[in-house]
Amino acid sequence: MARLHTENHLLDRIGWLRAAVLGANDGIVSTSSLVIGVAAAGASSSAVMLTGTAGLVAGAMSMAAGEYVSVSSQADAESADIAKEKAELATNPAFEREELTAIYQSRGLDRALAEQVADQLMAKDALKAHLRDELGLTEEMAARPLQAAWASALACGASHAAPSGSAAPTENASAEAQAACSGRAAISSVSPNSSRRCAFKASLAIN
Ligand SMILES: [Zn+2]
Picture 1: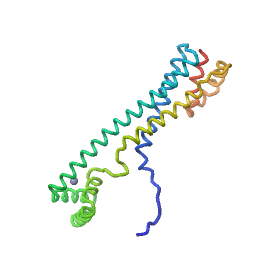
Picture 2: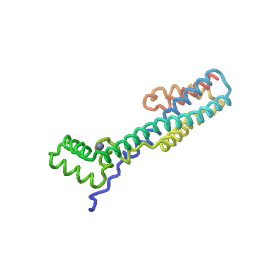
Picture 3: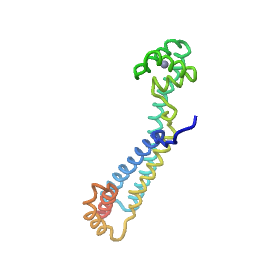
Picture 4: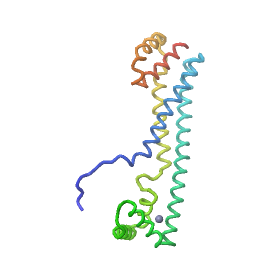
């Protein structure tokens, strides 16, 4: 059958996108906090840079490990359910057919059509039909621990570059920081990046 049009949906990216956003957020918040804290305590600029770099490595590793473990637990739960469904289909196909029929009835089909749909879908791929319509599991949305780990680590590492990149102190750091702060304070509500660098430069100025 010819397709009417080709739609480019984005939902299958949700796994790595969620992990990347989480990683980037952690990279920005933790590095900024770390670097501001160390700079405010009067550490030298090389110590501040070292802290930022250590934060980058620790953050990326921690986010990758965290994503891997948490998404793995999701993948474990999914494969346990898949195994259970496989066993039920093998031992009690009549009950499984009735289960699927009831699902389609609850979605608005009449009994006869629901039975017909259940029969045809089960004839094509019974497991896939049950996973999708009974458990809500699809290939596109399957848990992918390694993908989540990589996305999170890379986003975390990249986001560290923002606070760390502006970490190099200049000769006139103090004046620059004060000018930047007074000018940027007004737009800080729409530009979190500016306010973050602003706070960081202010802390370098103290140093
Ligand atoms: Zn089932």
